[in-house]
Image (tube, rainbow, N blue to C red; front, side, top):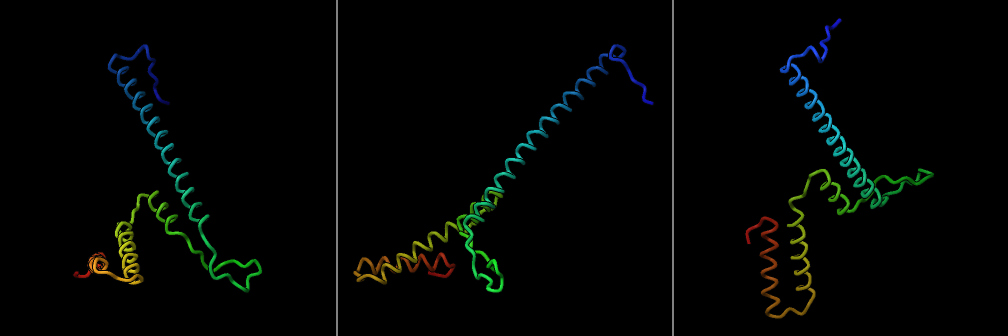
Length: 139
């Protein structure tokens, strides 16, 4: 059996140590509660992003042999996937470059589809150089 010391019998140093341990225990408990709250919030965010992906999923290649017609695969939107990846701290470094690449390709398409004037030829040449640079090719 453990010997117990009454508070009245403790020295000032022992009381100070006891109070310090109690304060540390309370601080540790509060930190654990805050961490648990943060983790619960993160779990909620992850669930929301998963539901977002699921909400934007489109069935693809439905099985004919299945009476309920379950799909073999789902197509998901890039936006819902990017939002989910952003939630878990991942980001696609190429997103900005891909947006620029799409803009340049659109400019090339416009230049090809229209009656090309001199200023448009210059624009097309600049667009081709930008496209080459974005694709990692010498301009």
